[in-house]
Length: 119
Image (cartoon, rainbow, N blue to C red; front, side, top):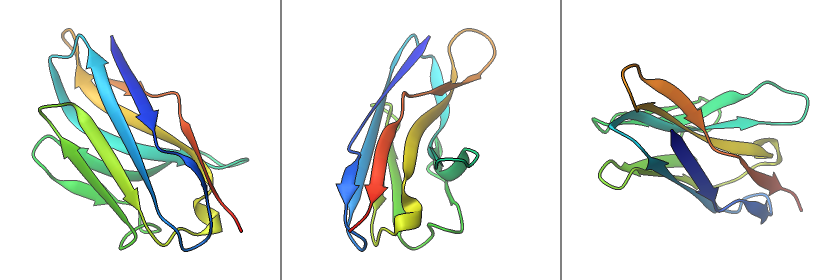
């Protein structure tokens, strides 16, 4: 199995910055994609950004130019630098890894970390 541990959430004022980090551990043979998703109250979980094992990145339109995802494939870590935060960025942020443990890759989730943007 794969365990994902997130850190870095909290309360920040509009326009502020936060950095989220996630580390994957367990019986991992390979991680293909790591990323961040978020879920606001009453809304569906949505993609924020992803980072592949080849270094490619992908962002939701709503965060382009404000958020930056980075990863270290050797350490199985991914980080999300969030700048110019807006109240609408308030959500529980979940780390995700698409990883190979046995034969078939599967998706794994962290427990989530709360990000609140409010004055």
